Structures are given as structure tokens and as C-alpha cells.
Length: 115
Length: 114
Image (cartoon, rainbow over all chains, first blue to last red; front, top):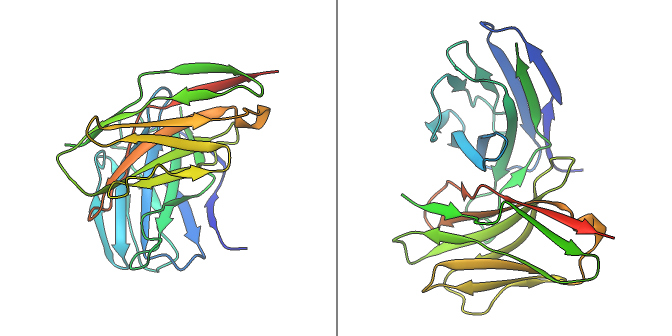
């Protein structure tokens, strides 16, 4: 089955530690995205990547970093510089260059709790 | 900057009845896409329906339809014959035609009563 996987579903870390969230897709999509979701708010874009080895900051990139070494993988690192890292993180992907290019598909998300 | 506003934090509907969720947006673009996403308790985001701004005809997907008013910048979602499985958070989202970023509203929680 094609889709997006995010692991783990729940992640717990101590304050001051960096943590990396995994996102893998086998949809052969070019573009990938990371969003953060907080209670009572919509999704906010952290980073996105349109092609391998290239990525751009979203609206709330401070305290986060990403890499895109492979088309199917777009890991997100939450660094100790992120002041409020506890949140639900969603990864998405989108095919570009076709008539379906406008739809983003989402993974199941990772709930990160930092104490 | 584009913004999306969902003015109803929560809505309730009786099973089998019809409910309409509101969404307004602000943009200076003339060509763009609008979406409604559903997020059930599992938190998996699911695309419900999409609308291309250049199309005058309102999109419909089974029990889900939209009322797209381009001049008013309004994009409401109508759910007919509501079912218990429709209970979820619903997000309205906007994307310009030549952009990559989706802009989301804050969401509306829909409760379905049996």
C-alpha cells in the first residue's frame, strides 16, 4: 500500500535534548512538508521541500531543522532551541507536475512530549 | 499574507440532519485552490473536498458539497445526512495556484448526536 509513515506515534524527551521525527513516503511524491498542530490552532508550516537536497523555511522554522537526502524521506529534528516543542507533528507530501498536484497527503502524525 | 478564518469553534448536528461549516479567506490572488480536510479522533488528516477558484460550479463529493462565493471570499462546507462517523475536526485550507504552502484555518469541531 502506498502512503506516508511517521514513527514513532508517541515520543517523549527530556528538555534540552534534540529529537528527530521520521517521515517516509512511497508515493513517489516530489514535495514534502512538516506541520505543527497545537490545541485550538490550525496546522502551521515548519519546513517544506520541493526536491531532493533542497528545502525552505515555513512560518515557524525557528528551533527546527530538516534534511532531504532521499526523495522518500524528510526527517525533522526538534532542537533544544525550540522553546515549546510539545505538540502534534504532521508530515505531508504532494506530487508535482500533474493534474493532481494540488492535493497534499498526510501521515498519521507524531505526538511529541518534552518534559 | 493570506489568511483563513473559521468562525465556528464547535458545531453540533443531529444524525441524518444537515450542517454547514463556515470558512472565509483573504487573498489578493485570482487563481487558487480551496480545501476541506477532516481530522477524526485518530488525528489522520483526510481530504474531504477541493475547489478550484476558476471553476464556477460548486464541488460535490457524495454527501459533502461546498458553497463557493469567490467575490465574498467564502467557502462553506455542507454535510447532508450526517452520520456518526462525520464527527471530527474540520479544517478549511487555501493554496495559491503557483504556491506550495497550504494555509489552514483554526478548525471547527463537529459533534454528531444520535
